[in-house]
Length: 188
Ligand code: SF4
Image (cartoon, rainbow, N blue to C red; front, side, top):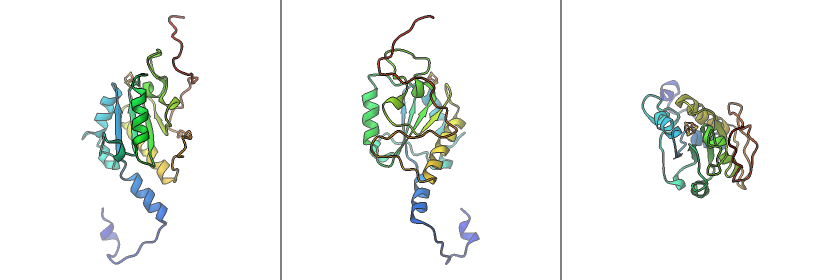
C-alpha cells in the first residue's frame, strides 16, 4: 500500500486497540446476499468488475450466516420467506449490520399486498436503507460505505434487538408500520 516506503521499517505506530479492531472490521466486511428479486441483479453488478466491491474489502459474499457480518436484503420478502430471513439473521455472527436494499425490502415497494412484508425493519433491525427501484450499484456502494462509517464511529449494534438509527444518506421509510397482514386496497 506504499506505507513501507513512507515509513522506516523499524517505525512504531501507537493507536487505540479499538481503532485497530474497527479498521479491521470495516475493511473486511463479509456480506450475506439475501437476494430475492430484481434488486439482486444490481447487487451482483456491484460485486462484478465494473463496480468492484472488492475496493471496499466487501467482495467476499458468503451464503453461510456464521461467516457473515453484513446482511444485504435485496428484493421483496414474502410472508413465507420471512422466517428464513429471521433465522439467517439470528445465525449471523456478532457484531452484524443490515442493509435494506431497494424499495421492496424497505417498504414493500409496489407490492402492497397481504403476501409481501411491508418493510423488513418490522421484523429485523436495519442499519442502512438504500433507496431506489432498483438502486444503482453506486448507491449500494454508498450504503456499504455508510456501514463503514458506522463501524468507524464505534457504533456496535445493540445485542438485544434494539432498533438502529438510519444514516443521513438513507431514506427513512415514510410508511406507517402496520402489523401483517396489511389491508388490501383496490382502486381509490
Ligand atoms: S425495489 Fe424494484 S428492483 Fe428492487 S426488488 Fe423491488 S421491484 Fe425489483
